[in-house]
Each structure stands twice: as C-alpha cells, then as structure tokens.
Length: 152
Image (cartoon, rainbow, N blue to C red; front, side, top):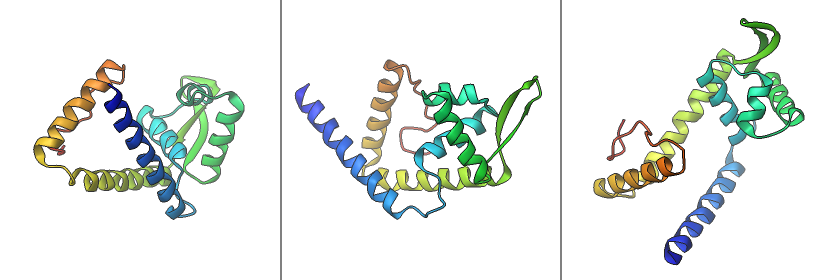
C-alpha cells in the first residue's frame, strides 16, 4: 500500500508540474482548464443555468456568475432565456465556443496519445482496465469510450 501511495503521489506531482509548465506556454486567449471544463459541461448539457454551473463547479453564485460573465465576454457562451422557463437564464455555447472547445479537446487528446505511446499495447490495456476499476469504485463511471489499446 505504501509503495502504491508513493508512486501515485509522485505521479500527481509530475502531472501538476506538467500542467504548470503548459500553463506558461498557453496562448494568452486560450481557455484555462476551468473555463474548458465549463465549456464542455455546457456543450454536453446543451445549456446550463447559473445554478447548474454552481453545482457543477461546487462554487457559490458570485464565482459562477463571474466565470460565466468572462466566458460570455470572450464570445464563448451566450446568455439567453430557458425555453422551458422564461424567468430562468440559460448559458449555451456560441459557434466560437464550440470551435474553441473542440480545438482544445483535440489538442488534449493528442497530448494524451503522445503519453500513451510511452507504453506498449499490453500496458495500455492494463492501465485502461485499472483506471476503469478505479472510476467505477469511486462513483466516476468507468466507460471512457476507448478500448484497452487506446483507440476509440
């Protein structure tokens, strides 16, 4: 158990250092990881209210509102009425937001593929199986939509 904890902690440190380094090289107008998460959530849901954003992010109304305002100002989200309840405001992806989210998703997948090439096919299957088990046991699902060899 202790060895596994030490390896996971080292992996976590390495991943964090990688994220910090990528943030330094990120183009100025590219979305942050948090902004990208919101764009994905809004896109997958087809639109979210401010209260939905609060719940998805685990933040209060002020933080969710500020983030939504920034994404609207960048032209990635649009604020409109919920067709089911005209009193409720709904945030949806703009065409520009869809393009940005899709481009960032493609870039992210390319980077993940590059990392996965460091492993052989059997190691990728083992990693995939273990990750699915961890996600299923932690309540995160388990179907990442990919086969064990890293292909869709």
